Amino acid sequence: MKRLTVSLLMLGGLLVSLQAAGAASIDSAYTKILLDSCPLIEAGDEEEGTFGGAWQCPGYKGEGVYVAEGDLRMFVSFGPDAANEPAAGQTLPNFNTVNETLEWRLRGGVPFATILRWFPSLDEGSKTGSVLIVTQLQPGGGTCQIARIDAQANKNANDLARQAADTLAGSFDCTQPPQIIGNPGILY
Image (cartoon, rainbow, N blue to C red):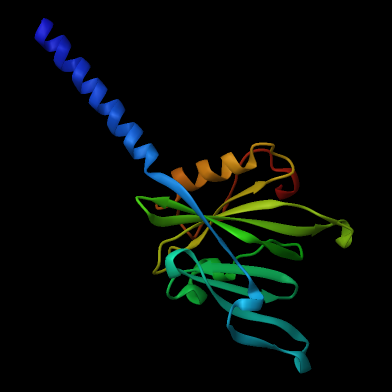
């Protein structure tokens, strides 16, 4: 009996150690989206009134970051074929811009999700909101927005975004809309 108890305690300790090691292997890295430094890959047509364009920016360890603007809305996607991923067609309904700081969630040094702050216009442009958007990284049709967190309605928005990335990325069905996490605020 004593031997079984010791074995169970050792097994329990091993499981706790493995869980802690697994949790510790998730980390963050940060890069900047500086459109002035990114190659323009598609220009808008001013004669037809379509301003904006699309840029290919470098991300974490050279991971491609596709940024496009059309009709005063931003679109951001990732990977070797980023322009053809579902994320390249996802934006917020209001006019918006994006922050330049991009957080990459890493598991064992490999990026599996990103977190980016978006700024939607509110009240016919007189105010701006703040929304964290979590995107899962799965090249081949699985790179899409998986969660949205109103950063003004949730004091712990960064924590909520990281939790969403760490638990949803990799298993999210891109045919579904992104989940609204926390207090919906402007994201009703």
